[in-house]
Length: 96
Image 1 (spheres, rainbow, N blue to C red):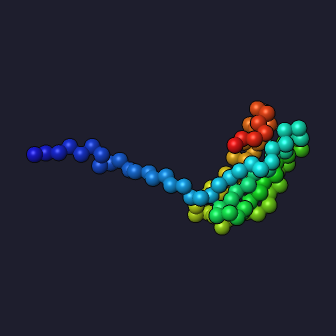
Image 2 (image 1 turned 90 degrees about the vertical axis):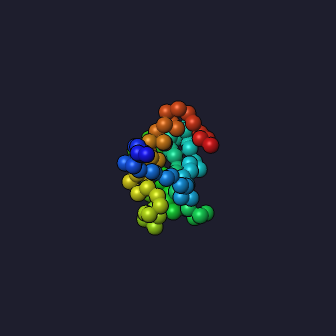
């Protein structure tokens, strides 16, 4: 009996939560300022303050220690800036 195994060339990707989280503890719609944080196991590793009025980004901390389980710093900055613009444009003060 011959079996036709057409799954032999398929790979499997498994997505598991890493425990690294991001949040937006401050969204100031009036002044167009947003703060984003990256946290792991209760410790805040990086805080990003985005001021869309002044077009500035201030970074405190780093995600370097999380390099094997999280995005890199540039990816977080892109995500936070994109989310900040979205929140301000759509008048979202509490994305939870």
